[in-house]
Length: 111
Image (cartoon, rainbow, N blue to C red; front, side, top):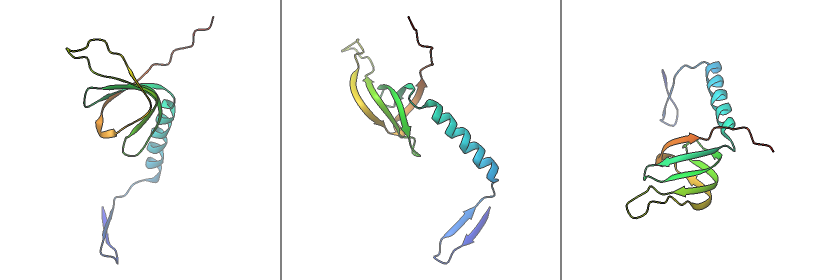
């Protein structure tokens, strides 16, 4: 790791990387995210709620945007039926995400 003292007083540190490995890992991650676009997924949140919706996008902070989202509360003693609350477009903060499950692709049934 090399440290460089700049004129403005900041110290810049850089570690040697190969450009090829950065491009390959970035391309792999990008292709994986692109393969998840418009797929239905379930997101478990830290407060016990679940959101189910269509994956539209994410950002560097791992925030996720779901389209046509529905919210399911965790069952309690006061109610047993898990009826969804329709949210529509929803942003889930990355720091509240516990797990993400992607719905398996199934071939459409044609009559």
